[in-house]
Length: 81
Image (cartoon, rainbow, N blue to C red; front, side, top):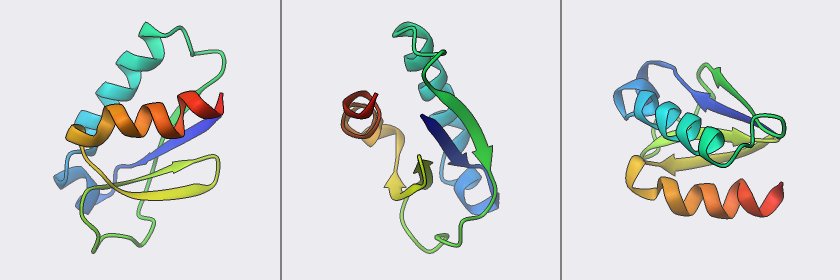
């Protein structure tokens, strides 16, 4: 599984740096490093949306915030591994 977090200007200001840390912690805590590749990406053109844009295996999700991280991780990462 490849997870790409937008680190472009808009998403950076919306908290992408915090989401990167949350993903790193969960991947490490759950020993998923062999199954999950975490990467940054630049603008996906969804800047006018709330929250950060994240791409999981070519599916684009918008509106991800640190408050929504746990449910996002469970629904879009854990259920698909």
